[in-house]
Length: 444
Ligand code: UGA
Image 1 (cartoon, rainbow, N blue to C red):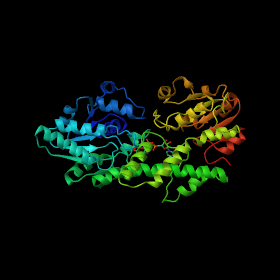
Image 2: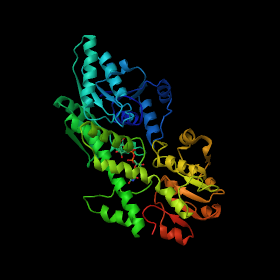
Image 3: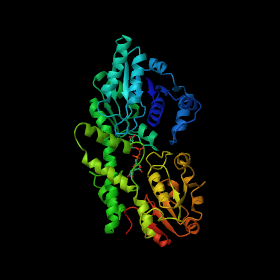
């Protein structure tokens, strides 16, 4: 099948590459000339395990192409995926200007039947706006060309994007007619594993599904973070509680890990956007209000544990003269993405309290330099952060932090103090090894 994917961000690039991998002819379009030039040379703008070799292979096999020329891509393709960004506007609503600009551009150049697919995360009702923008452009040209607009939200996770796309739990397709549904089903049939299925529905329900899914996952995380904080107070171990509740098949094990609060480019933005949609309809989403509030608070919990350790409160200067090592800056492991990362809140607060920081992340150092500049020190490796440090804070759950050389850590730190925001180690073993170990929901 001939496909164009417009927008070469995370979702667009992964979708385009995976569609090419299954034999389709895919043209990736972006307005950023530098990005397209780089992609043609095999330089990938994001860190995503497995993506680079897959792009290279499909480019070499002449199934995956990159261009800034939208009309050419539209002319060659039957299915046009819109995968441009929908950033949060000031009021929390999703900013649709890029999506609608692409829709209009398509309308201004298409010359035969097209299926336009909303892949970007867009609020309920956007497909209708896309439809209207294309129709308007066609009308201005005085032509009458058939087209259909489909909603096909994406559920891939950064860091596991290829796997999520190639082996999805489900593919959601919102379409208003059988012809488009059949084409979309055919496109996705190579990705259907034993467990996966295609769920078809009307367009508005598909748009809503995306937000409801992310809001539900964010809710689970905030819920578990509150349970973890309560575990600390009552002397329970949240890991045991998590196993205990997760084995109820109605609850399930995934996305129940307490930590430093959720971040990234999706949960914070999508929770805000669905709340905004509700407000526009005169409704307040009370559960999500609390989910956001808890998440904001959770980003401060690790600093509270540090303050607690020194028996002091959060007044400016409270940590003056203290120096801390920080492991992990990205919003989660396996990505260089620092958008809405809890590390930003934690580090800024430590700086406000007067502490100095030396940080390391396996992939996010460049991003970190853009954010913190020379307000903190950067180390070349995880152990290099420890020199002269009063303690170690762990913010991201990278695999290489999971089984470190504890002796080396102990010898390097001035005091064997670790505040772990991701529960990477066993509190009992840490105690046996002589560490003062603070973590989330297991500080008995
Ligand atoms: C999320 C969803 O998981 C994807 O299904 C969705 O497609 C994507 O948003 C999107 O809308 O594009 P992503 O933002 O890549 O994916 O990251 P997640 O793995 O979901 O993690 C989000 C945040 O929650 C991270 O900060 C992570 O550390 C945190 N988290 C996750 C927890 O604190 N506990 C958990 O148990 C799981």
